[in-house]
Structures are given as C-alpha cells and as structure tokens.
Length: 357
Figure: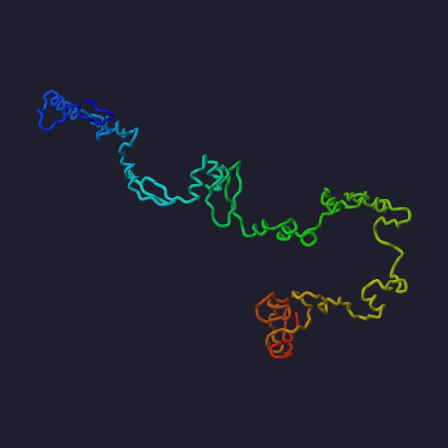
C-alpha cells in the first residue's frame, strides 16, 4: 500500500476481529505490502533516508559532500583542532600542520593594505631609490664622508677632524677665522689699487706710478718725465750739469758753512774739538733694543745670570726658555754670542757676567 506523505497505513480489512475468520486475500495482500515497504527505501519522515545508496541518502538528508558539507581534509582537521584566542592568526608549521601566533592591531592595519604603496605608507617606509641603494652598499669606517661619483652613485672619502671644524662653520666669516684667513688680521682686505698693482706685468727697471686712475708700470725715462726730472743725459736748464769726474773749486768747507774745515777725519775731529777720540756708535757700547730673545750684546755688556760662577771664570750663557726674565749658565735656550766672564755675585745664585770678547 503506498505511503501517504511518507506515513504508512495498513490496507482496510486487514485487522483481525475476535471470533471471526481471517480472510486470506486481504491478509496476504497486507503481508506482501509490509514486505514491499520493508524492502524499499524508508522515507525521511519515517526515520529513513529516502534512498537506497549512501550518495542518495546524503543528498536526501542535505548532506551532499562538496555541496552541503565539507569533504574531509587533513589541513581543515588540523585547523579545527586549534584553540583560538583574541588577536591571533593561523599559520602553517608544516604539511597540513598549523599553529597560532599573535596579530596586533598594527599588524591588521598592515595586512589590510591593498597595495605596496599603501603598505609603505602604513610602515612610513622609504620607497626604493637607486641613490639610497648605492649608499646602503657602502662599507663605512671612522672619519669618512659620503660623496657622489656619478648619478645615484656614491663613494666614501676621508674626513679629518680639521675638515670637520670647517664644515661646521655657520658662515664665511667663521670659516675664514677657522682657516686663519680673517680679513684685516690674517689676509689683506680687497683693495682696487692693490688689485691693480698685483695685475701689473713687472719689468726690469720699471716703476709703479699712479696715473690718476690706477697704477701702471713706467720705464725709468717715463718715470723721470712724470716727475719733471727730464733725463739723466740732459738736465733742466736750472739744474747743475754734472758730466762726471770730480767737483772742483770746493775744498774743506768751513765749519761756519756747515763743514769741518778739514779734508780728513782726524783733522775734522781736531777742528771740532774732539782731539784724537774715535767716534763710536752707541750700539758699539750698549744694547739699546727691546727684544727678550736677543743673543748678541756689545763687548763690555754686563748682565745678571742665574748660576754660581767663580770670579773671572768664563761660562757659556743661555736664554732661559720657561720665562723671559732670566739668563742661565746651563744649556736651555739659545746661547748668547761671545765670551763671558763672571764679575762677582749680587745674591745667592745670581752672578754678574761680562762679555769680554
């Protein structure tokens, strides 16, 4: 008997009634019906699958592999076995094996970028550049600087401590001071007149003269003309004509006329009341200079020297290097010229020394 809505109902007349005889036709039909129902696929509503094959049963039950349910996969099984937590991501550790690792908010902001450009923006990264690649390939060491050798090509060169003192100067004035080129102190300030002189082509016998505008080189003859001196061969009419030789007619100019009235030095000294006294320059008798490093004193000069020397004994005398106040008898600074002899002591350890030759 066919099922109605998947529900089986026995045919009419098949139920037994007390004290009555069971009819073979309806009973046999009922048995055949049960046999047929038992041998056919039981509908889902009756607890069956409505199919006679596993594939049909899965389809009938809405469990078709690849359509309704996922086919078995070792990787999915490995993923299913993980214990997840917040802010983690799954990653492979081998074939069909996986694990979990942390995934920060920043990491999520990076992996959601749609392009390399967007990722670089997120990372605040520098885009690839040939110049930067060249620099990155350099091997640096102490006291070196980077410089270009061609387009986007860099190399290194030595950079001394002195060079750094120039490079850190803020302006030209400071740089000149570092280099010892301070204008007006170390080097001459620019001057148009000096520039004109430095640009002249110097010649033998030439004179530098001003022409009212700049400086020029003039020959001796041109310079004499500029000075109103004419030429040496031809003097101006008002000048004394000296053609060479000696001047005659003037002998022994009188004292009253500014002369000495004598034709020799000894006679001149006699006429001037100097007798036989030789005239000496003061520099022959005294040192009149002011240099603390002077080593040449006139014969007869007496100086105070640090050291104990026997009277009249000779000793070399030297400048004392640590200060400019003393002379010393032991080798120290520059040695004084000449021969020196002791002339006594003024105090303990201070001798008077006189140059005698």
